Length: 165
Image (cartoon, rainbow, N blue to C red; front, side, top):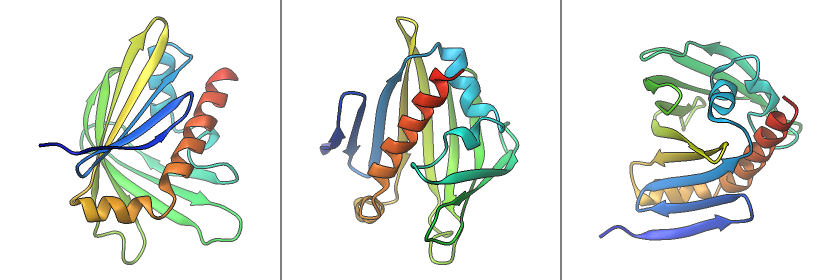
């Protein structure tokens, strides 16, 4: 039996866990192709990736199965945090899967798996992101870092960037 736990909900975003998976759902007021391109364009990633007050630098972004990505997150009052992963599957503009690694000592051995699906709904785009953790305990540890607040702020920045297109 799958255990579903609501983690966060507001007018725009729903976050819940299904056992060791964390699921995000949000509908963006932009067409499917526009949302897809914003995810796949290395020049647009710095405009939205990360919570308020942070910046992101795209070091590498080879969008193809087997290609790798690497972003550096910067924010006042903390060291830079590198994130990296590999694109596993791409089905433009419907979905992609990737690995996700926080590339710092003590974390890089924890390889996350993420899937993103994009669905057109009345001219808008519903985005569902699913992050799989090796265990419920690892999911709870990640949640304790404040990742939901940072994720909601990231989606808010994404929405604002889409509105400025």
